[in-house]
Length: 227
Image 1: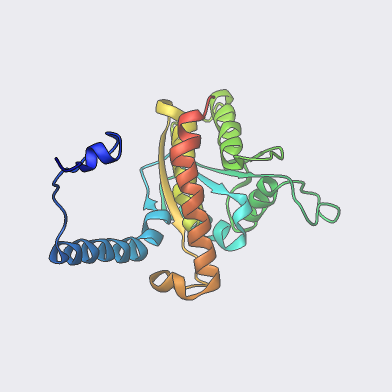
Image 2: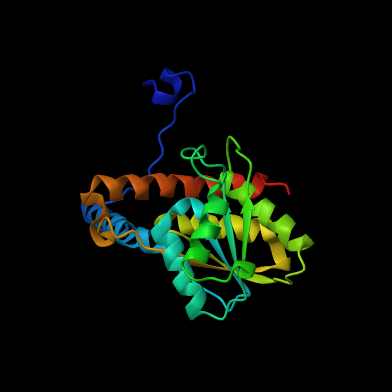
């Protein structure tokens, strides 16, 4: 009697017939995946640089983002039906010995006032330096101020820089919770073409870094955050 393969390999292997993809099916699958990759590449800047405002009491400007963003935020403030501007930011890394302002939050506030906002309608909320999750630290400081303030703010739009906005939007919604409504408005970076972001080193760096940071925030930080 001939020896079977099962007997030859001490019963560790057995033969089973199975279905497999044909070359036509592989072509269809590869075509679908290629189309999906192209779609993601084209749409990811729009996804990250979210523009989804709400009717809000206050506009929150992330002060670290620079003068063009602050100027854009001030224009949004005057065009919208806002009562208040909140500026956030960490201690200044450069120029703190030359300026009377010690944080990006304070610097953004005086910039907004210089651009025409009434001083009593702007509140700077500085944040201490942290090693990680800086946006979450800023959001916690904002939440603490909102809960203690007499301004009676229950809704706000986050005004941030380009593809960082989606992450800020996610983090502020999580930190502020159900007690506050949150929208988001991205100031688009004009230094690279969002439709061909991969063609410039700046666009490539911004998109890749923020994509990875958003994935971390969504899959890890979001589920481990404790207020």
